[in-house]
Length: 488
Ligand code: NAD
Image (cartoon, rainbow, N blue to C red; front, side, top):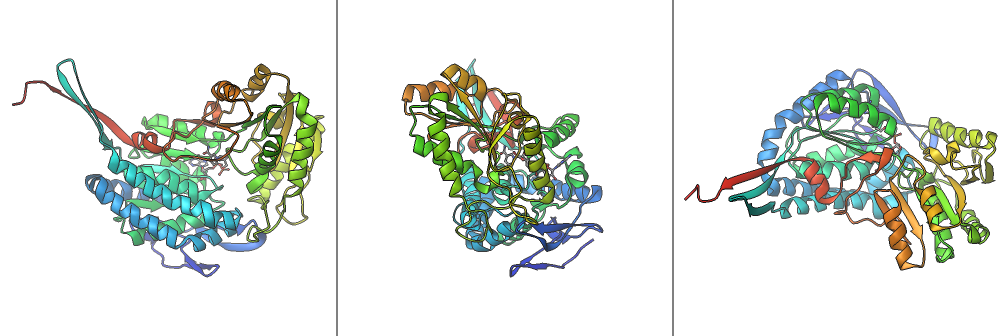
């Protein structure tokens, strides 16, 4: 069903429909998108894709694939650079929309998050162009490694940081020569729709980049089950990853999954305690809806009280408010269901005998804000320690030596990241190596080089993205071996 209807969102014209084969396509059914800043505010009714939508989108991606693959890295890079420039030019609009849609702080969106989306496209266009493969001689043959584009690729993203994550995942797939069907989360569909408009304007050929809106278990499940899809790149919860992974296994399709976290934030007595306390209180930023957040504070027992006092003082500086206002540091949660889920974790924790040291309540009647909350659990086995809450809820535990710190740090099924505060370089190395996680930060947090591998251990994920790791994932690597002396 073709449709040209567009909606006005904060002065920006946005299509609520799918973008398939270079055209806007509607669905008979729709789903409502509302703003967490004011839940009474309906942003619009978005197309709710189904199995037929998925079939159309994968067909478009499959048709476009041979041409895009043959266009070579320079041809693909030209489109990607143009798209990056368009994202930069539209950063204020994108920041306004993303802020309205999922309540991330607007200033941070405009200054850091949206520009990072543009950088993702530039960085992968550069990286793909720089790739020279590898050549060497062995066993009387000349060996060469080539990257072959893999095919139509399905990318499924979560509701938190949707624009940054969509660009982070689509850029390497497109640079590698794959065509893409992006399925954003149903709680924050806006920015993916604008990305489709910008890709269109940047001159991506029809079918190279497609966006399908809708519910995960419906159109999402149909997309990942299509046997023509040759790569699946997913970011979201372990629960959905299990279902998507099963579909990938049926079709023998490589699959990466960037999943949840329950990351340790380890503070040794020899650390700069002021810096550690400030960064620990910073784990409440974005209302804790950050997969990498260090939500388990593990503090050396001898400095527990000093650290706690300073960390709570920093927590008091947080301002819960409208994400559009520059003084706000804690935004509302994404959805009433998510607010209920976060509060449910805290209520169960309290009922089970864990000590709520700070917060633990819904902050405003009728709003989606949750108080920054700190809980001292009874044991490492408490549910609040073992499961991802994905809200402004931290736990505080103590340790007496390095061995106990590492045992606690590695004492969940997750392994996405770790944060260590220490003033001792040798200890930083020891703990950095011992913590089982995809990324460990020492005396800092969230600083990332786009060429570094990114992913998780345990139930935090499968595979690595970032830099060449993502380009390799989106390619079929081929070894070409030619017998020496066999060709004149
Ligand atoms: P989710 O797993 O519920 O949904 C993620 C996406 O998957 C959505 O687009 C959803 O529609 C889709 N989906 C759900 N079931 C599906 C199915 N059966 N087939 C195909 N698609 C399906 O996650 P969420 O609630 O949107 O996001 C929060 C989670 O994402 C948290 O666990 C968070 O830690 C994680 N996350 C991880 C990273 C990372 O890089 N590791 C980054 C951001 C968020």
